[in-house]
Length: 209
Image (cartoon, rainbow, N blue to C red; front, side, top):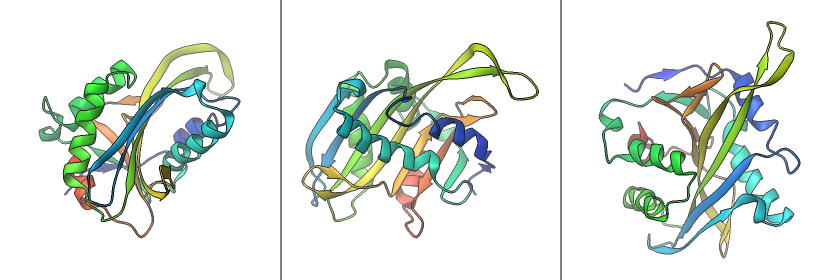
């Protein structure tokens, strides 16, 4: 049985409150398109702030779906087993992608290949990754902000989205936050995984945890 941990809803609200055009700290978005036959159909990797306001808004809507989901039902925190944390696995790829801020296209291709090998829904979809750095504010016991942040939560939001039109991702049916945001910091041996209500993608869940 996969080990889970309760998610504090306030942690997720800390992330989503910043996911708007004025406050976003997302640095980069990268992804690829997969056709209905499961074949690679192009990729992108761009500085988030270089997108138009319209494009940023569309992407924020996708990224925000994951942390904004119903906690402990649609969004569940899973422990990543020691077996999954071996060198060369998905965890290792994500650790390196986090470190480089999604700027390594070879690593991105490795991640896409792993997903495409396991996921064959029979319809075209997009694999999307967002890199973000959240400056965690220093707060007192009364939760009032005291000053500059003491640490940064650097993380990736992943989303797998059915395409609604030609190269137009819809809202995700599966996604994740890596590493998990727990007790105000990064838990490298956990990830928070989202599955749309009524949609179970056990093949993808087993890939990660």
